[in-house]
Image (cartoon, rainbow, N blue to C red; front, side, top):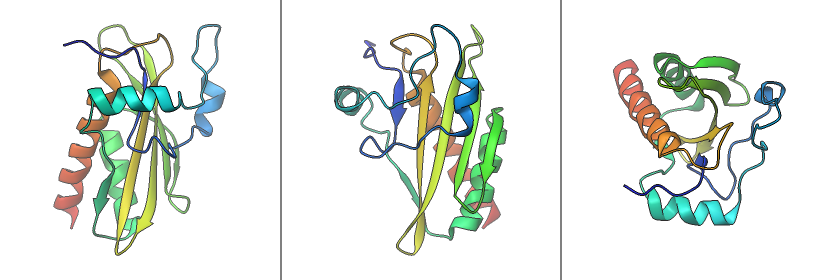
Length: 152
């Protein structure tokens, strides 16, 4: 597979979840900027990873938040912030092989009778990620769906 030279993947390229609590951890000479990589990256993402889409669950935000946090913990991520009233989780995911630190932001918003879950995963280093961030988002949303189904 030929992966695009992008390293910032999100379910909402038009309004990606922000990094707030993680900003203090994104330090160092070679660390990528925390801002979203913009329209060119979004276009590349749509071509390479069309399956990276928001998840809508048909329950309230409070219930989804508990499941979202449990799923993030199940992924083995270091939880940096978990703000239920704001519907926001921030975490650090460490890659297995080279132990790179990647940042993850999860945002929950009311969506009709349910809750929309948006996720962003961004590598701190490099220009490309060999598909790591897209796979991480897909695995996370699958885990969230499974955990949430088991809780409700």
